[in-house]
Image 1 (tube, rainbow, N blue to C red):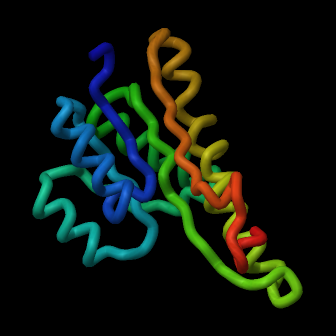
Image 2 (cartoon, rainbow, N blue to C red):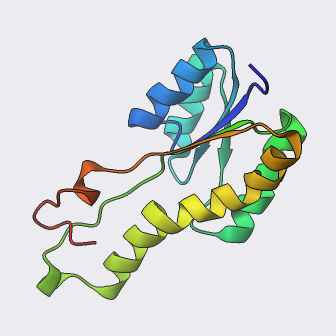
Image 3 (cartoon, rainbow, N blue to C red):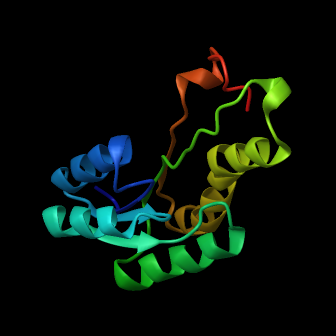
Length: 147
């Protein structure tokens, strides 16, 4: 393993939780990023010992500051798993612009925000892995998930 620091967005619940634990079991030091559920993040940290960090992955500057904190605490990030995602379901004719934007910012823009802040270090070290997770609904839509 060339670099054993892994960062997982949406890393304290669901698929992100499982990914964080699997990476830890594979020997990585893991930073699990979450947005709002402090109680669940605290419980996750207590159960796993995995470091948790709170920031909004939709915010480019917050991602930069967050990556700096993780690298200060744990070291250079060698693995990024973009897993954070949300749904704001509504049929198109009932969907608000806010619902549309919130999903696109979280499920798409956040990937750029995170990748942009880790890519230069990966390039300098000539090592890095980025895994972008998306929903099957991006390929085959479901009713109410126009966004």
